[in-house]
Image 1 (cartoon, rainbow over the protein chains, first blue to last red):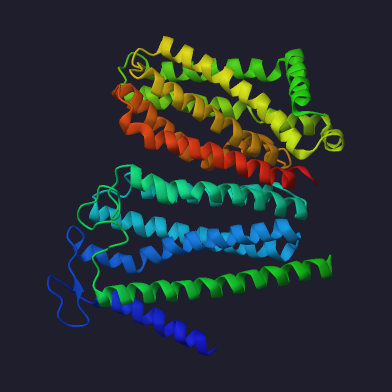
Image 2 (image 1 turned 90 degrees about the horizontal axis):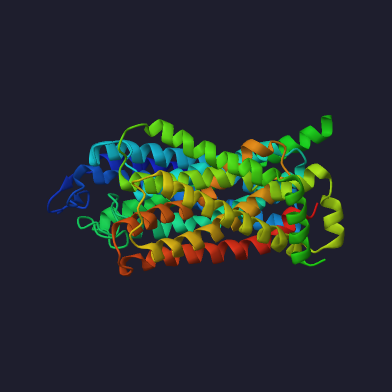
Length: 232
Length: 219
């Protein structure tokens, strides 16, 4: 119970701080964010968009890890865990795509411009969609678990091509692209201390939220399976 | 049973029925003529024709390459194969057959395409050839692996492009980019990264295929 309250307070603080703290040219107080050239007020999306994109990848990673575990142990609980993670990954992937597209409308002038990062999030959406299509096409439980585990591992090895290589070799508009002169690369984002603090608090808060949702999701799927087996 | 024997068996049964070859040739003709009709008398740009080239290749691959494993399921010979050969042998045999098929198919497409499209002029032929060879290998590996997955699923025809597209997307994007570069310049220096990506993709895919095929193949 206590960590749910902590999570609530954390997310509430991050939401309020992320939206209301002003952006000024020379931050003097602890509640002021620095101005990043070329981003301005648009920079605030980092507190909400980046965590959803981060969770998309984390959910995919977890799904793959449980897929590998399933292939090793053939334990159907691992398959349910992987499936639950993939479902959440799809939700966060849609959120990241939509928040990114809305942001792009204001920052770049159009909702969609096939920036390398937009291409990669689109590919992730396709991968998740294909994974669910595959799951619904196989009837036998063990076969379904094995095939979707194999597919998510194959898809996982192609993700580095999208996330790490493509945005760096292709010309892009996204902050952190190879030819971005305003914001610089992702690693040395021009954030000051408090902006970084709220950014990382947001990452932590969203990650805990994801873990909680994943836990509830896989437990409920597990109970559904048990009830199905009892009454049929 | 060696993988070469499996390849010879596939080749013999293919030459007897000519199912994949006939449908592939017709598919290529249909796809290219649809593109030609839709262009009509319009003048298309060089880069667009380079991109459309890979569209033709992708959909032709999607129409023909799933046969490798689906035909075994349909004829009910999967269990026999499981008894007489190890999964690695079977995968390399099927991969060999699909490699030959992809290369034959894509060479036909390339020749037809460059004859029919005036805008499709490659300046840097050796760069294009490197990209073509590495790309064909990647397409063959990935589509053979996906074919083995969908052979076990119920909706075989529609699922194949759905599952293959996200896996082939990094390869396709790099190939389209390289084709543009081969049409644009005659130098090599700016294309090493892309060629390296193609090489990495092929190596990663072949490693993953041999590691995971056991789990797909064994019931």
